[in-house]
Length: 211
Image (cartoon, rainbow, N blue to C red; front, top):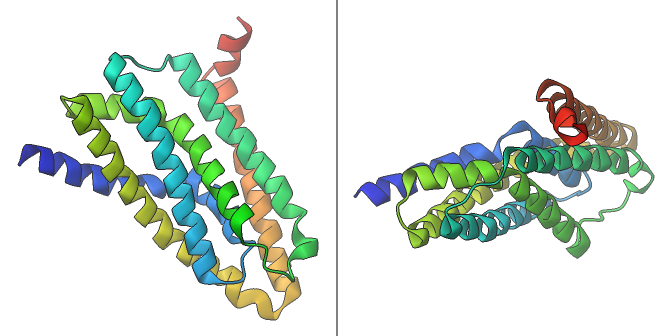
């Protein structure tokens, strides 16, 4: 019963985890490129798959080794998320020339999965600490991470569906649609810059790098 409660807790945490600001902003840049809700929703699922795969691989390895990711490495991986958000923002801003077409296809799903992988790398340290604090055996840890990942996929599926509605319903006006896409790109870029500044200056990552 205890393990079932832990797994249920992991599922709920997975849904909550999907709604973190950096996750939502990253996926919104991808959702903005689609003109069909179900395609945006599927992109969210692929993000969750990529995120879960990374957590599972790194999580199980670290649990088996009974090791943790050094703080400097964990923060550096988080910094990588900031770089990715800026990149996604810039590419989204300059994608407006092609907004009359629906470009969501295999390449977009792979891009969404890659974004999820990067987020998974950045979240591995916290995930392993959480898992090691609640689970005794490695196989239980693997199941916990998978259940957590399922929750994340469901959370991202629901939220990308909601996120896609403004972009889909605004296709009647190229100007409105283009403005929404540009706004999404700007938000991603600004948040990415803030994300890197906070890690580098406030969390003193730059001091660790250059000391």
